[in-house]
Image (tube, rainbow, N blue to C red):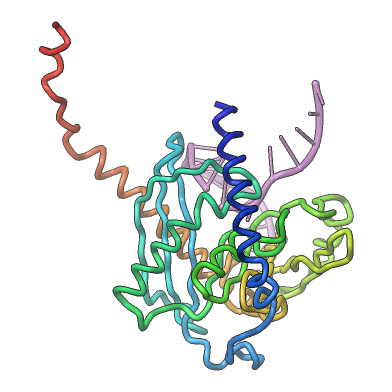
Length: 273
DNA sequence: GCGACAG
DNA sequence: ATCTTGTCGC
């Protein structure tokens, strides 16, 4: 049990090391720089479609999940595209290795979009989780960005306590100092590098979200984009992906319980022998 | 034994 | 992530 989780974590670790060797140059090139035209102006003119991805899980079922991808119009935040798909999760959840658990299904969802509605391809993706705010400087938002080539932003609902970051008294004070929606403070590593920003994304919510660079985008653009996508605390693309994947699971469970039980082979008679 | 722990 | 209704407050 614990052995299984440990061995899978080891495999993930080895995979990550190999991956890092191969992608080192790519990382250095495009992770935290603006690369798109729409990023160069304050109102993001030219940005029309923002994507959001998320996975929802079933309680007590460690293999079944629903992967969802939505695309919203910008700046109106209306849903243009939705894709929910039941998937069989392989990797366990290990903090630091989230990408190895969720990314494959998100890539598949984006490939389906590319095939069905290429015109609705998002110009940027908001990802549930962190970007460079990560033990290895390479969270799920970076991972997904490199695999898809899309600009990505990591939006975490909880602080990943890494590299000197901690949810301690100082951090809580800094949160209290976030008075208005849009207020931020930087998340600094021990060495002084900015790993991300805590953002008060919604005036009525005290709890911030943690924004970090995923791919092909600066932190400043990332924070401004996330803020401009918020109707509530969680930015609308991720929120819609979350809502829709949960609803999809609800209907899925409904359908399963209503459908006739899978037929058993006539094993009763066989077992007598 | 206690704390940490993106989703 | 998930278990979970109503409820208190702006």
